[in-house]
Amino acid sequence: MSDLPDTLIRDAILNARYFVEAVFQGARHPGKTPWQRVTIRPILLKEQRYLQFSFFDSKQTFARNYRGREAETQLAELLAMPFKSIQATTTEETIRVQFSKNGRPILHRQPHGDKQIELDMAHDRVKPNLLDDQAARPFLTAIGVMTADGRIRANQQRKFRQINEFLRLIDETDEIDAMYPGPVSVVDLGCGSAALSFATYHYFNDVKKLPTSLSGVDTKAHLMERHRETAGRLGWDQMNFVTGRIIDFEPAGKPDVVLALHACDTATDEALAQAIHWQSPFIFSAPCCHHHLQAQWTTTDTPEPFKPVMRHGIMRERLGDILTDAFRAHILRLMGYRTDVVEFVAVEHTPKNLMIRAVLVDAPPLRALVDEYAALKAYWGVTPYLEELLGQELQSVLTSI
Image (cartoon, rainbow, N blue to C red; front, side):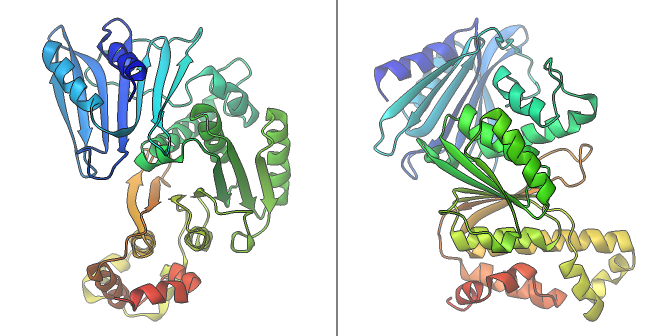
């Protein structure tokens, strides 16, 4: 990193009057940083100011509090590490340093203008919303989440939280910063009301400053027409909405990001299959209802230990949901994706709160993963619909080890 961005980041973090938060994430060179992500924020402990460093190593997060020379030393060590991106937020501006493919640091400075961020040094505090800024107002108003005077509608509070938590999940995916300087191609399969489609476009295009195109796909023609009109009013001419089936959609080029958010039943499997066919680097899927696997249980024998569970309809349904998503996540791992299943919004806001997040790492599957998949299928006597859709593409992986 050159002296200028290095000094700007350091001075911003050490300024007790206006420093809010800093995030170091990603590694320019694999294995050269012990942490995937480090966040720094000021806190008050026994009336004294500390800098709290939270370190995430892909498995767990632990925090340490430093002050004075110890904080300066710890910060110097972080600045010397080859992170992909560093962002420091102050009450007045956001300073972002990202690295191009050849390792050149690119500096971005975005003043907050009239809407300065308040300094909050509480030990436990709520994370700021990614959409809590003036730039989000036009699209939030256009999709009905916000009123014209900038207030979140009372009946849209849950939707607003869901949008923010979804964008935060994308933002916390380390490899996203490797997309710099763009352009970024996004496909939302089964986009429905498209609130998250518009939010995703805003995030990449306006927040991350990456030239972005987005295609939404759904069978509901009246919704697609409405979304095209909304995108036109916003001047977002790189958004396109297509009426059609997920399984029939052909993008102009390989999408960088595929979304499948609350696509019902097997539509989720169709979206995942398409993303795998396209070898899209990022997949974010929030499954909705699940019926295909549960229908197979009507013709299979229930494993003896689970008969007390399967006796109750609600438990049978929830177990079917869990198994379906477990199969989906496992197949993604078999197909070369690093995959995790997370809760992306609290259950009190929506019961449909699981997110399958997959990042293409193109690593061959271990024999153990193949054996686990075969054992799970045999135990329940089912075949996931995603396996049927992938056909020989998955079979070649299962038989190659």
